[in-house]
Image 1 (cartoon, rainbow, N blue to C red):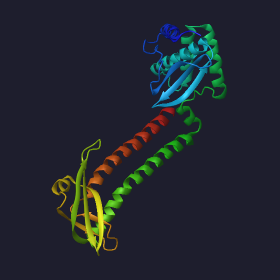
Image 2 (tube, rainbow, N blue to C red):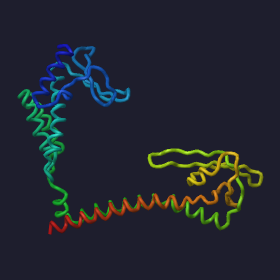
Image 3 (cartoon, helix red, strand yellow):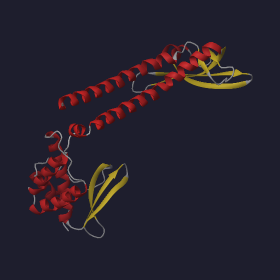
Length: 291
């Protein structure tokens, strides 16, 4: 069995012969814990190719000989180069594997004819179970007109479901604010907490308050507007309205959650409308071209 340095030098020469970069030609000899592999000697001889990520071993493959290890490393490098080649030269409507496998075979063939034959056998086994499929979506739609509309209907239905679910908080906020404005009882609550958080967009203001109804203490913490968040601090009192039937339901007077949610939901509505109309337009245009 050769030394690690010998294996590394030979692999580098193989990758450079394929046209790969120095970075691609590197072999790790210690765990990287980032999803990449490293090579280490096996206890019973040969080599272990190990994939680790965040301290966990996800794959361990034993190679009995130097040649087997070099082939696996080389074919893997060729695959990455072939993926880049296919992406840069993609043929619309053609199974991407055609160009990818052809390129991979060409690259390993630059190193060894035996490697090319070995890889061709592996690719043949893959295609035996999952043959090439070159029919583009437009051809399938032409053969099965209902299929295209079925796909569009499913996508639109899914987007409408997302739309309905996204609006639930808006409906709940509107219903509670309208209900408490009509029959809620006024009360001064004690502010217990005033804080902010900074998500990816903007600043969110939080206000905690407590109040008593019929001798029972209720604690609540809600998202409030900037004016209310900056206007109250612990120890002060804040005007609220609570539900006499369900005292735990309350709102801060002047804190219009419905208006804020409406702005967010409006942005979501605009995005969904763009996706739905864009999808319908592309589908109709594709059908028109076929005719």
